[in-house]
Length: 284
Image 1 (cartoon, rainbow, N blue to C red):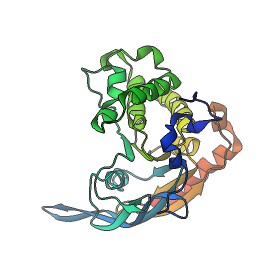
Image 2: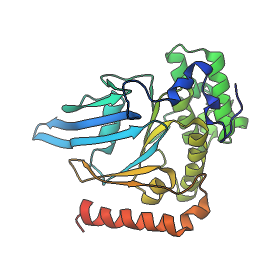
Image 3: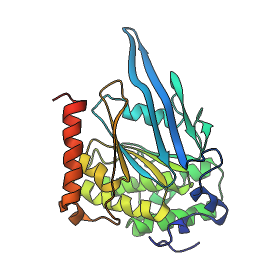
């Protein structure tokens, strides 16, 4: 296996999976994940609640995209649909040009809480998906060890979850979502429960992982600075029912560091998104 480096991001991919960095035949424009007019209506005793309305967006190969929106606008609902866990009422989500109708090994998911198995070690927890998919455990273990070293957990592979801090547990959860080599990683507010200092450290760790693996990432967050720091593009959803009301490209060079947050360009992007969010999403 090739050594991990920012200059050789595909070093984490097995030789027979290098094609995943190339757009598939089913997506000639390079889009990996696409939602076309996706609507979701929850049925309740009091009637239907429309969570998403004609949501249309594209995520391109190797792109990091954050989705911002007020609570209850359908951000997490969209991730459930994109992961195949929830069928839409109308519309379709496509992965590599094929409709998403059920959970797929080509999709990795990182939840708000790491949900680690307490009876398994750090390394064993990262291999859960690989074991379920009957992948080569020798290769998967080496990939897991490389990722764990990359995020500073190389000395904790035989520890159990209760011996780790919240931030360390969340890093294990992220590695678990990557080890089976999915095409896209869906992340549902993974840092929401962490304190401010740990959260700041985690965005640096996530950037490091993303630059090494170059996976397509869909990242749900309520934090505008977090979205701008991590993303190539930020998508803003309206209040429920959620629909796309703004997209903003982030052209700040990588790798980004804490000093980036003090730059005029970073501040300007955050200000623009905050003003748009207040005026057009929250109606302030």
